[in-house]
Amino acid sequence: MTTREQDLALAQRVQRLAADPRVTGALFGTGAAIATILDGGMHDQVTLGAIQDLALGPQRTSGGPVTAPGRSDQDLTAWYAERRLDPIRELLRKDIRRYQPPAATRVCQAPMPQKGRCDRSSSRSTMLTDWTTGQRQWCEACTRHTDWWTTYIAEHARGRPEIVPQPYANTGGALARHFPEIDWPRLWHELDPHWEPRPEREPAESSPPTLQVITSEPGPPSKHSHTRQPSSRSRARLILVPDLSEP
Image (cartoon, rainbow, N blue to C red; front, side, top):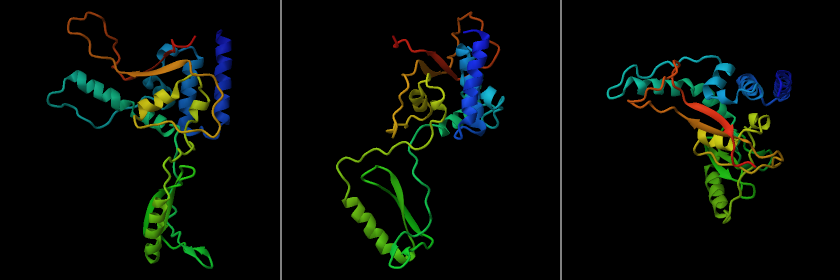
């Protein structure tokens, strides 16, 4: 791909990002940084640090151990390198594709004959699962309707089916729509080991990803190694490499 073609691909991708109402603020900057690296032919330089420096600017780590008993200078350097990348990790975590239940309303939901429901400020609440969809919703009650609240929860529990469906994903994944070549599920699991894929209302029809995301941290050099080390600090790297399993 020529330089002109790379510039055109970058401009088009950034335009699509800018037109997406879900990609704003720092998330847009992150998307533009990834586009610059991918469409600019910089695959070998795709690291968490590179994305963060392009999207958020160089970050300084504050706090943490200046010295620690039993820990070498190299261990402390690795600690600071990890902490320096916390901003980009947190930004990407917030965009993980997932199901997110609604926020509590803080009002009593007990039924009332004339106005439908109580609507007084709630004093107790719990989340219940919709057995037909898997979605979660709040059940809240005021001090006057404690008995209703307790009874409703018990009746709801008795109706639990043997198989509860998984709720559809309803938030996150904005960047994934613009960079289908990246294996986002693998990255999301790296960012959150507890992450599990959720069903989609409209399954994606794009081709499988062709770039694997590998997070790694350079290991300490051997005591007898004579390999010249780079002058920059070691950092946890996010590397995009071709998926060799693709035909």
